[in-house]
Image (cartoon, rainbow, N blue to C red):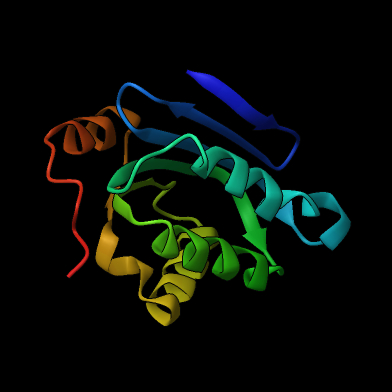
Length: 135
């Protein structure tokens, strides 16, 4: 896997052979300066994928976000770049889960996504194939 970005708030990597992005969201997205490279880093990771790419999003350590616009812009960019299946891994009792799903409902991104409680379940679902879930 090729690591594209890693900091205190997110990590982005791509497994080119699986056509899959791995995204880990962490901390509290409160100050814009903390995630100022988010969209550029996300675009750089997407440059390593092909249409229908899958994404595993691990947000178990995301404490919440005030910067929903940044997240929304990333979801829209992902849809424009022909994302396929998205497996989201949550701490089930987290406020971030509610925030992420609310943003996804507004952008249409939830059509691509399923929620899981473990990385292993998420990875298995992505491995099933059928990455093109867009209508």
